[in-house]
Length: 91
Image 1 (cartoon, rainbow, N blue to C red):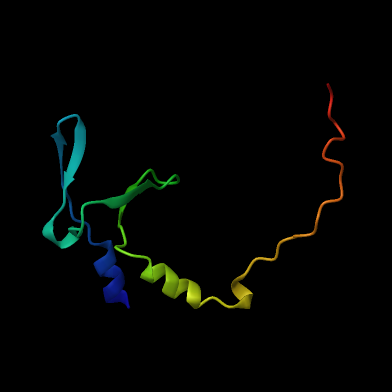
Image 2 (image 1 turned 30 degrees about the vertical axis):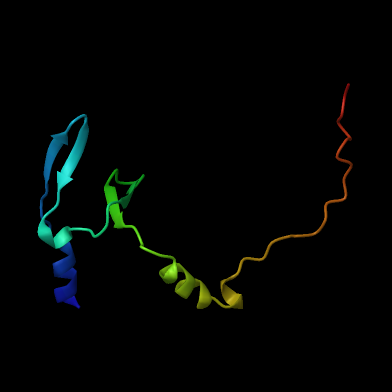
């Protein structure tokens, strides 16, 4: 396990460059993505920019959703509200 933690902490660098008016990142071969697009988000706590592989289909999501059971659901109050929708209406 200690060996795995050490592997995850190993940092590599990537080169930044300008492509027209956009900033781009030249990724090392070990970090290349397949496809034409990736998801991008910024971690609000650290400011880190995170790129994620965009799935080619919904199979991963469907497989994960099919593994959910009753304990994974959130209970919601779905009772009908008894109120007059026009109570505050003014003309």
